[in-house]
Image 1 (tube, rainbow, N blue to C red):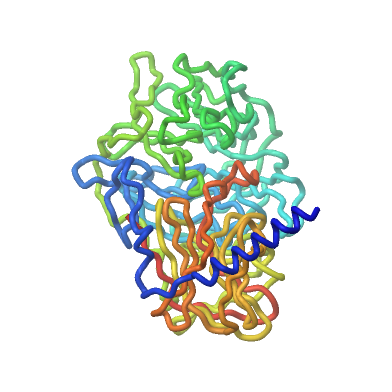
Image 2: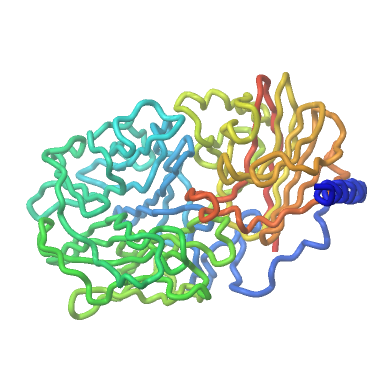
Length: 544
C-alpha cells in the first residue's frame, strides 16, 4: 500500500509541475501540431477548409458526406435527390439533404421537430404527390411512453421541405428499419429487419393486415468474422420485371469485416426471393482497407442513367467520426443482377453527371438566427426541451439542466474532418456550469467547464484527476483542437492570449466499439445547474 500511495503522490507532483508549464501563447494554433498526417487520400477543401468529395475534374473521392451520417435513405424525385439518416438521440432530428448529382449535398432542414424516441434507420418514399418518412422510434429514458422497445411511425408532407406532419403511430412493435415499396398488385408494403413485412392502407398511414415473414436474407459462412447475424436495413426497388431487395447483414460495427451488403430478387413483391450469386455485393475484406463495416445501402439511378449504391462505412483510423456516407457505382450484368464497381473506395471514381451545387454548410455560428436541427441538435432531450435554447442578438442562451455534461442534454453538431479546431466565448448567469466539449454520449466525452469558482476538466466521461489551474471567472473563451485524434484544450480571458492545458488526450478509443453506441465524437456546448450560459461566436476551422 505504501508503494501505491507513493506512486500517486509522485504522479500528482508531476502533474503540478507540468501544469505550471502550461504556456501562454498568441491567438494562433499550437505550431507543433498544425499539420495533419501527410499520407493517405487528398481531399479538396470547401467551406471553412472542410473536406469534400468533388475533385472538380469529373471525379469524386469518398465520403460524399463526411461525418456521422449513417443508414442513408435516398429518394430520386425527377432531377432531385433527397437523403436523410438515422438521427438517434438528436432533437430536432432527420436532417434532409438535397443534391442534383449524388456527390454535392446541401442541407434543407429537419423533418422531425419533436422525436418521440431514439430514431433508427428510416425510409423516404414518395407516393402520388405526397412524401413519407417511415421511422422506428426506440424507447429511451427521455422518451414519452411508447408501447414497445421499437415502434414504427410515419410522417408525411407535401414537399421534402415540409411542413411535416406529427408522427402517426402504425401500431407495429418490436421491428426496425422500415423499407417502403409498391408491389405489382398496386398495394403499398413496409419491409423490416429479420425478413418481416406488412401491407399498408392506400394512404400509407395505417396497416392493412398482419405482420408476416416474407423472406430470409442470404447467410454468409459461419467462420466469417462479423459482429452478429443481424439481417436489417431492407431497401427495395423495381427495375424492369424484377423487384430487388438490398439487405445488410453481419452487424453494423464490431470487426472491420463484419457489415456487408447482400441482394435478393423476385418477380413479385410476394416472392419467392432468390439470392444473388455474387453475394455479398459489398464487404470489407481486410482491416487494411480505408473503409470498414460497409453496409446499409440504397440503390438509385444517377442523373446520367448509371446506377449507384449509397451506404455507410467507418473510416480506418477515424472511427470517432462515426459511419460516413459513401457512394459506389454498380454495373448491371447480363443475367439481371448487379455488381459493385468501386473497389475499396480509397481511389477517385467517375462522378455522376448532374448539376453541382455548393456542398455542405458552415459549422461556425454567429448566433444571429437559429440553426436548430440543421447545424445544432440537443442530445437525449425530451420533446419539449427545445425551449431551453434561445438565439437572439448574436448569442445562444442555453438553460442549465442536470448536474454536469453527462445529464445536461448538450447541444451538439456533426463534423467530418480528420483535424479541426473549435472555439467559443461563454458567460455564466446564476448557479450554472457551462463549457465546451467533444461529446460522444453521456458516458464518454471530454472538454472543460467553468462555474465561476473553478475550471473542471473532463476526460473519459468524468472529471479529470488533474484539474487545470484556471482563474475563477464567469466569462471565458475556450478552444479545443482535435488533430488526428490528439485533443488539446485552451482557454483565454480576452480571446487573444491563450493558455494551453498541460495534458493532451488521445481519443481514438472514443468510438462505438468502446461503449456500444452508434454515435460519433462531436463538438458540443453544455449548461448544467439552475442558471443559464450565453455562448457567442462559435468558430470552426478544418486543419490540414
